[in-house]
Length: 88
Image 1 (cartoon, one colour):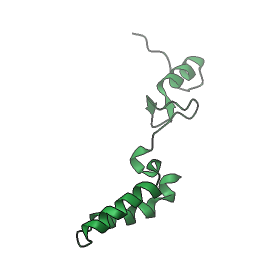
Image 2 (cartoon, rainbow, N blue to C red; image 1 turned 180 degrees about the vertical axis):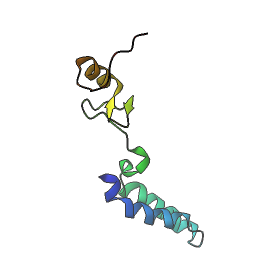
Image 3 (cartoon, rainbow, N blue to C red; image 1 turned 90 degrees about the vertical axis):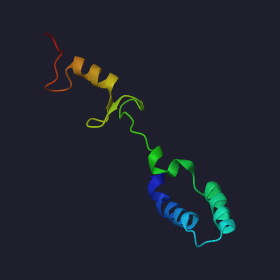
Image 4 (spheres, rainbow, N blue to C red; image 1 turned 135 degrees about the horizontal axis):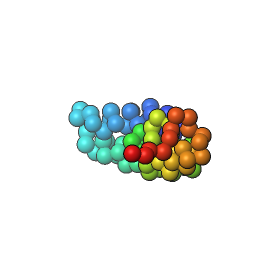
């Protein structure tokens, strides 16, 4: 939600700070203002896929939005149809 809320602010600040026609002092001033006004967590690259059940951030499969540990537990319990323990 933070990404969507601050998307316009980020694009405006980015446009001003990268515009070479704006004086350097003004660009630096806008950059300092950006750091204080816009939260860091509003950046799109800080969004992390998390497990729906546990909230775990590592080892999360995109297709199911579940961590590898929960997939294993659910498969052993029989809650994932079509998944069986491998044996060869």
